[in-house]
Length: 166
Image 1 (tube, one colour):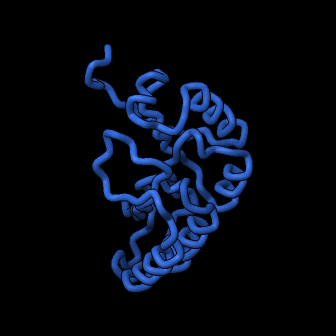
Image 2 (cartoon, one colour):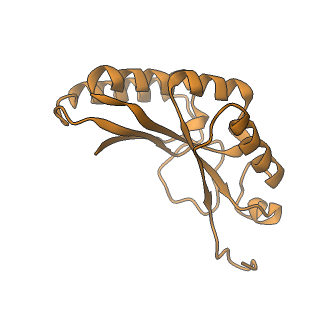
């Protein structure tokens, strides 16, 4: 089974625990997208005829960039590689990014799975970690995603927070 991982190195805020490469400024997102599309062109023969079963947008926070950005990358991948009809296309997102318009755009782009950076359902812990969402936003965003037909949703949780009861 073949898959493609696309790293989107942008985030709304710097979470205190994060050690990944990212930027809170996306002024160069257009250049980054062009570089990604060129890289896909250069590697189009890398997998030969092997079928792509999964496309994963990680980061950073891919929901920080426009849905058109992701849609164009997905279209490029589909034009260059043999992608399974039922391929799982995942985007990492934060609960505070989920809106009706974003869900509609993701659905039309072919995205069918979310990996939500929930981290905790405790608002004090979320504040301690410098997360941009609340526990209420987590619940609301999952409910909204389900309303729009997204049933393949995973969440990231962090435990063992210093000075916090687990």
